Amino acid sequence: MSDRFAVLPQYVLPKRALTVMAGQLASARLGGLTTAAIRRFVARYRVNMAEAANPDIASYACFNDFFTRALTPGARPLATADLICPVDGAISQFGAIARDQIFQAKGHTYSTTALVGGDAALAAQFENGHFATLYLSPRDYHRIHMPCAGTLTRMIHVPGDLFSVNPTTARGVPGLFARNERVVCLFESAQGPFVLVLVGATIVGSMATVWHGQVNPPRTGTLRRWDYPPGQVHLPQGQEMGRFLLGSTVVMLFPAGPLQFNPQWAPMRAIQLGEAMAQRSAV
Image 1 (cartoon, rainbow, N blue to C red):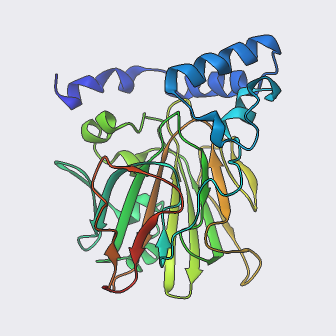
Image 2: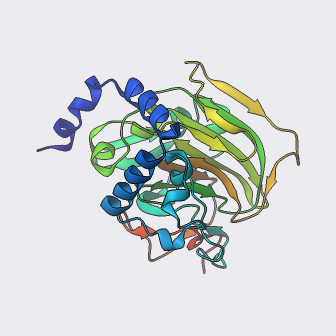
Image 3: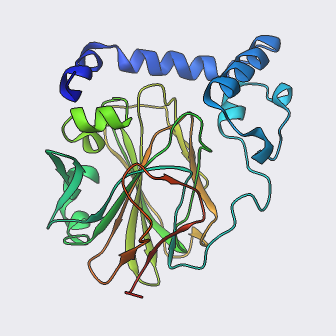
């Protein structure tokens, strides 16, 4: 079965209604039912609760608390690198931006302008730059951390679809990451600007940042933008910057210039928060 054929049902599924319902269920405090459901989830997806700061499944009042669980201190040591991996998950794609085109999968690219919500001036800062797209599965740790130290300058909530973001859908839905709902975060760093995009998906009830809290819902259907004065929000490398409920995808953009990705990286390779992602100059 071709990937495009496999994803056809997603075009007709009531994705928004399913996501709203999933969000309501994930926040429900149902006592023993919640605990039983979490135990089943842990068993099915082989979640390593030994890494959790709180490994007691029965202590989580709702699925949201479980999905966004913290890790035990020291579980993810930070590599000595200019850019570290910001999440647990798997590599979807990474590499050079071809003028303004980001590689999604064989036969599919999308533009930086579309990804950031139509802001051509913002997208132009990353012309012929570099990108990395990282997929978080349901079993993964769902918090996102800073790949390097950065000062927040802007956040944009871009409304959109809620397709799944699994590898099959990435191969079958054109422009997937630029058509799904997303939160675009623009930072300034010692080496220039970078963008970190949290991409929503079916069943991903909400996305949140540490400086704003829950960004969605609400889902107003219109683009929303927040600008931040210099120095108001500064986050060091490795610090949490946001989180997903369930799994999803992070897309990062970096400007043109010398950048060497970890030579061990390859599409579909498993990755962990804190491992070396890239050096700003060749080594």
